[in-house]
Amino acid sequence: MQKIVIAVTGASGAIYAKLLFDKLIRLQNQWSAVAVVMTDNAKTVWQTELGNNDFLGYPGFQFYDKNDFYAPFASGSGQFNTMIVVPCSMGTLGRVAGGISNDLISRAADVILKERRRLICVLRDTPYNLIHIRNMEQVTLAGGIICPASPSFYSRPQTLEDVAATVVDRVIDLAGLQQDSYRWGGK
Image (cartoon, rainbow, N blue to C red; front, side):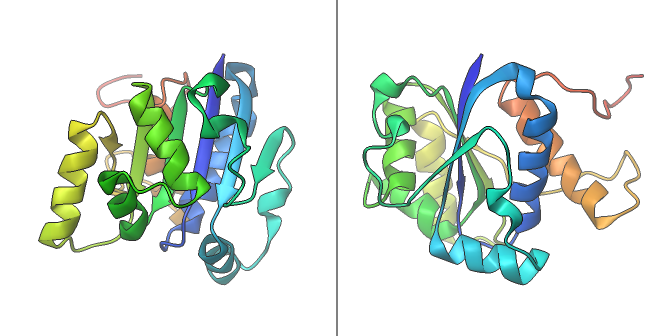
């Protein structure tokens, strides 16, 4: 059973976090814990983009303050095996790449990397400057997975949610969870 940390930062793309939360509820037989930490900007962006504050209404999810260094995933002994930063701001990526653990998100990412576990950063910003690219390289060299929020279209998505779900489905696959979703050349 997976123990998953989800970090939501202030980059645009709250829809990705919401759809990931919704998908994880449907896949709850595959995880034993989902811990969530959101930045203040993430809460503001959620309200702005989605028009609500429904992020707290997910049964079974445990929410932590961004400065709560007593959270179980702030230590490798907490045994969380996957961390998904969605959306991942370039500021958060830079702190992770530089090993700067100044909040719970950057500390948890540092723990995941040092324990050789799975870190998935869903970047939403575009275009990239050279600093962004070098930070992506640094996180990749440390064992993290960079997953730009680049939707696919071969499944012919019909709504904004369908388009965003193509990214979330990819993240679910990268996290090692089993799901029914569109597969190229599959049935």
